[in-house]
Length: 453
Image 1 (cartoon, one colour):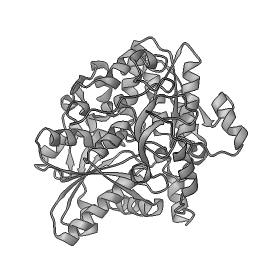
Image 2: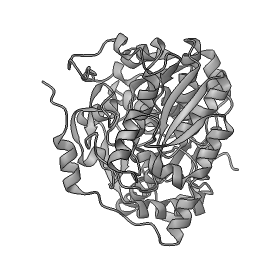
Image 3: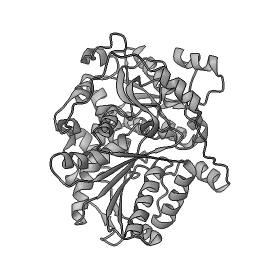
């Protein structure tokens, strides 16, 4: 492959610290609240869920937090991840834009999720924890934590959203290969799961429901902690290795992005790529356009309300201020399961409120069309989630063509679609539809937001 196409760093250039955007924000993040008292939570309130080291990262405002050497040593298995110049896609689009993509599908689990699963497993092991309960949407996070569990000898139980459990059997199989237990959610193994099944025995599930089950599992056992693959501050923090590496690789290409793009479900891969560049802008560096891409069927940033809400359906979690569709909102069963979450990461929501990003939403068929074009040009099959970022990148490149502008576009290709081929089979068979959520159900879910003084 020509050197002009692929930009690789030496493994010694893997970041030595994670970047915390909270140090550079012009306004602080609204506090997380106790669901009972509505007062800001204390570290002690979170101890049933997380080891103290992760709680400290959650509330930290330090700009840089050191990456433990054991974590960095494991990162060396796939990091630094490659940055590619998409010359073939540029030719296919006949665009003057320069398109780059940071490819996170090279990790053992096939996505960016491993950047935080390794870190979370390390801190849990350090705290003497032998078991972790978690949820997963499309399965990337469950696969990543299952892999981390094998490395640190931690048992992992995964509550997988039912629709994805049925759609993606190979993701489930991968978790089992790594030694994790994976069950469909809602399940009959928790009170919150049984309550949902009592109302709807055929429930397709949601990430909010699966979170409720995993949290309930964790707090009911002394040997278990909970782990989340997106949304929380410490999770977004761990993902910033993506953007920090991309900064160095763009410098190798003698370029700098004018536009930075990532897909957003809970928001971790987007934050991982974009936050280091936004931070540079906030410290006086080059101004950039930042685009967060979501599905129209679950339009958290584009249609949600910025308000305090629960992160789960059963209301077991603290209250966080975020763009939300309401904790009882049930997303449609579309194939990008990792983007089927009612809320958005508080930090990303706050960054949007500060005017530092632009949200955009797409239907799933146009995203699969973009993914196929990308695959036939670049040879990599994107995960359905990642196809949303690809679609936005193509649209921006075509806009550059219309305007005759030679802009630089950087996309986070957050994972490969090798375990999502049924989705592509359905696409080619014409079985995919662009479903529309029920606006009355959205209004009802938003009407049930908790009252916060």
